[in-house]
Image (cartoon, rainbow, N blue to C red):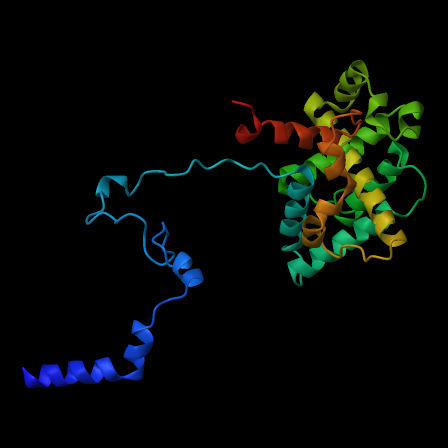
Length: 264
């Protein structure tokens, strides 16, 4: 058709056609050689036309149960207690956290179990677990009852145990006698020793931040956000020498239990 030939002739004489028919340089030819490529905007494989309705309730990924730490459970319980009082529970929880940091760093030197007993007494009094008008035990959550139980354990420590800052001073027989005196289990005693170890590590970390001119965490959420800077993380990753920290040993055992870290 004449119209078709006219348009074809005009296109062949246009500058765009001249540019398109110009031969490519040798360097550019190498770049335009046929090669394998993956499109980022198109699916690699065609999706099925119909989804199988039987797989709608299938669990595709196994969900691992992450157990909260002892301190996390404690502060979650403190937040539930503050909801009973007037005011914003988040602000009150922040106030309790800052108070706990002040009590933790009140006395310099080694964080002995005697100082840990003073710290527990101040915290339990602030939370109304002990004192003139304490909250009834039936209204307390399990972590708060455990905190109150740890305060009770401090009354049965020997002078040698109070002067020490390490859990290694407690032999197995000493743990058994302490559990019998307080009428609790060995796990409760181990949780008390772990709580002391966590407080000792936090205390060291806070003092280091002050020396370095860094601010202290103002809330428990900020403490969790900055927890990767705690010295316990590096101590748990070392192989030799073996650490005496209970928290580092527990963190290392949790890492070793991950399935993809185990050799095939």
